[in-house]
Every structure is written in structure tokens, then in C-alpha cells.
Image (tube, rainbow, N blue to C red; front, side, top):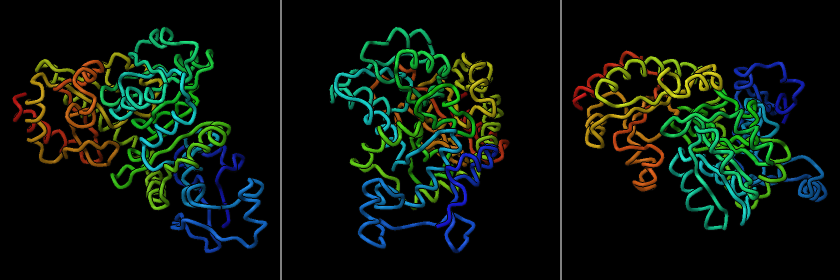
Length: 407
């Protein structure tokens, strides 16, 4: 195969983000195909025994087995790394595989993790249940209060783990403050950037060490496949993450990698358009929610407690996702959902279709009522992913649903 771009930094350094999303990491075979080739192969053959021995010894480049390398997967990894501004990237089968790998690859019994209490339900499960089973101590804090990060540090603290904006309460972390604090104490920061994607926010620019993704979300953007990714320094990816991934096997399939490659080509356009639509829809909803005694959680609106920080960290758009709370609890939230005609009831995000869900009974149901209350996931909270439909149609649909729910 002829490798026409990829990780050649000199060749791509002048490219802007949107160009990297379309052209980065492209390899071409002797056929000169325009679209990335799909390599559905679990293994590879070799010209001679010495070649395979050199590859397995790490003395020669080339493919050995698709749990370790695959051309289609490698193209996606190069493209994501370029978009993120990272030295390297490894992809995983799902977003949660990425989060799990990013943590377990560097933690041992006796270590301590400080994590944001506002997080996706499965991420909280890792912190609250999985890590402690292996003797790893954890503490969850209010990530929006800078001083809580400092106060939580112990001599054995090894990782800060957070998502910003957070799922589903849209808490925003001051990445510069937290990452500088972590670096001063020799702590690794792992940032879940799924709500923003590299099109809207690049945590490495604020000092983060590791960025993890559910590429299922905005990167694919059309609700088709599951995928995850972890980005960081070459040393972290090759020496810390890769041994864990090689031997545990949470690998991304070539087909799913190819689908995400296609999604990345339009990521910049979709993320900006959906962010703009989310601002307009949020402005439409906010007065109605406030009048009823509810609340709006939207990092792109001035009512958000960290609005100024959100705009500094996400200047191109604050993402397609926000949440709002209705005062009538679960019954009123369900009534609103059931009255929708256009917007789908779904727990996915990042899709080009608008989706609405009730986190307390879906994405955060397994956490228990006490944990949900701690992080602000109330019975009246609804989370919306704003898609690419005409925003006027979305307004009309929500206007009907609000009326049917007595709002």
C-alpha cells in the first residue's frame, strides 16, 4: 500500500482541522482508490520466515494480526490523532472499552483515582464498583468546584478522570486549572471528550494527558456503529496502553473503523450545525421551562453557571446536547416523551437525528436513587441531542409535547 498521508507531521502540519478530518491518515493501494479501503482480514501472510520474526520482534514495520494492527483501523487511528493534536491513538470496540482501557492500563492496587461525580452511568460504575474490586481507591467530587480537586489529592493519587461537558448534567470542568494541578502533582488526567469531539474541543491544548472517546457518538454521527478511541503521547499509547490492549483484546473491527472514517469526513460540519441548532432550541425551551419552575442545563446559554468557561473551551460551539428539568418529576417527563411525534425517544447521543431521553430511567438507572441525587440526575431531568432536522420542526414538536405534558 502507498501511504500518502498519515502521521507524517511535516506533510500535514499546515492542514486545518476540517482538512485533517477528510484527508488525514489516508493510505492508498496500487489501485489508487479515493475512498479508504476496507480490509476484512484477521491475519496476514509474509514473504519469508525472517520477515515475520522481525515484525513480531518489533524490528520491522508491517501487519501481524488484526488484534494488533489492521490497515483500515490504522487509518482511523492516524486520522483521530491528527484531529486531536495527539502523538498517537488506539481505537477500541466501544466507548466504554476505551474508558476502561484508559484507566486500567495505568492503575494498580493501592492507587487512588479522583473522578467527577457527574458522568455517564457506566463511567461512574467503573469508579464506584470496578476499580475498588481491584484495590484501587476512588473518590468522586463536584468537578465544577476547582478547590475540590486540590482537596482530594492523596500521596497515592495517580489519575484525575472527568468528562466535560458531563453526561447528563452538562457540568463543565476548568481543564486548564485541573490539568495544571494534576501535572504539578505527577497525576495523569484522563478526559472523556465524547460530548464535544475534537471538532469543538481539544483537551490536550488545555494540558490533558489522555483523551478518551465514545466514537459511537459524534464521530460516527449517524447511529450506525459502536467504537471508542484513546489519544495521548506516543509513550503512553505504545508503552502503557498497548500492552494492556494487546493482551485483553478490546479491539475495533475494520468495518466499524471504516464507518467512523466516513463519519469523520462530515464531523466538523455536523458538530457546528448541531451546536448552532442546540443554541436556538435551548433559547426556545428555556423560558417555558423557567416559567413552569424547572431549570435549563445548557453550556451555550448565559444561564449556565460556567457559561464563560464553556465558550473559552469550546469557541466553535458547545455541542448538540443539553438537558432541562421539568417540575413534575418522572410522570411529567414521561408525558412529554410520549407526546413527541418527530423527535425520537432514545438514549444515544451525537446522532444527526434529534433524540430525547430520561436519564434516571435509562443511562443512569443502574446507579441507584442516592447516587443519582448526588450528581443531580433528578426524576424530572430530560436530555436532548439536537440533530440536523429543521429547527422549526423541532420547535413545533416540542411545543406540542410541552402542552401535552401540562407545561
